[in-house]
Amino acid sequence: MRNSARKQLHNRSIQSRLRKIEKSVRQAAGDGKKADSAKALQVALSAVDKAVKSGVITRATANRKKSRLTLAVNRVK
Image: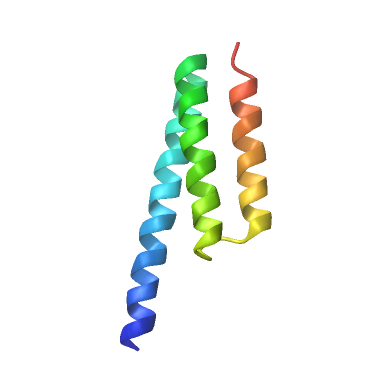
């Protein structure tokens, strides 16, 4: 039980970090800051890949998140 509780805490912290990073990308894209959103996108893509590597999210979920974030950044003029 202790092991599963420890892993749950670890996974929850990674998921929380992903949500914060995703929010920062969308915030920068919504504000129309192309450079800031592109920089935040790189951080987000790396974080998503690391979450897949540690087994927190599945590859399909990661691909969907990366695609949607990239589209949001590319819409910025």
